Length: 361
Ligand SMILES: [Zn+2]
Image (tube, rainbow, N blue to C red):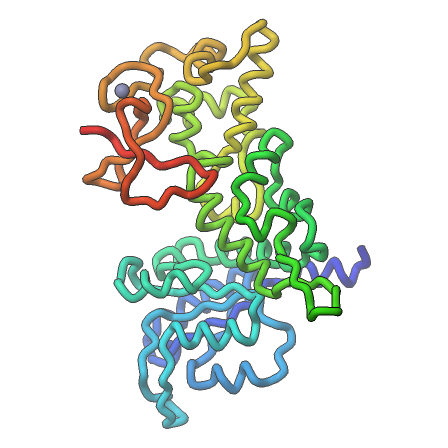
């Protein structure tokens, strides 16, 4: 790599922040923007919504790596130009997407859960609260922008190898990833499109990179399947989640099973389920054992103390095989047996991902 291209690779992500609240005297948005820029990790430019159309129609170099759009854009008056602007967050996002179909757009909202913000969230690539932006903005924006760049740089979009590389899939999990990939991405992130009857030149949709990123964030990193969170992983290995987090992961080499693919730096950690099973079966093999029920064998191999063994929250007996959600309190998730839980009727079954369970009363 030449010195020049190396430099280009490491330039700070350029971000446009579309908001009508930068011009007030005591604008907390402006203060936040200045704080984020002072970290030296991002370069954020404020854009008033009135100027957005004109800016987008001009020749833009470099193209911003990421866009922030304020949820609370309201039809109002530009402070200097005396122009009314009819832009709300969604149309503003649409204008950006039309011009730059490969660039991520994040919705900034004071409070997540506002009805409209949730409704709009589907269009946007991520929703960030001001609070989160204040606490972790430089990390989130710079890391995510880098990951989106890595996705955009994939040249061969009609091949599955770049997908496996972007997700850093260990060999044990290759098959499970191939199974959960949506049909259009089974042979690469860009669906081949034939141009015309006689023109057999294959091409791909420009938006395919963003589509791939959305799938990673909304399904792969969220649903139990090839990737497990701490609670699912601890339950798979038959131990309490606190013990898994505070003891087990520190005294073994299990960290090799962590997900290190795109967006791993800005989401809570995930583990490759098949790699965890391979990890214990390799150790079990040395002791002449084979893995049938990992939740029984792992505590035996790793000598997990009795009081740290996972227990079913419903019947209080050992060896729960899965995790169940409390029907009355979705934030409460606990280990449970298959027989002490049932398929969550509120969720559409996701083909090839595991079904989420709810706890029996
Ligand atoms: Zn039970």
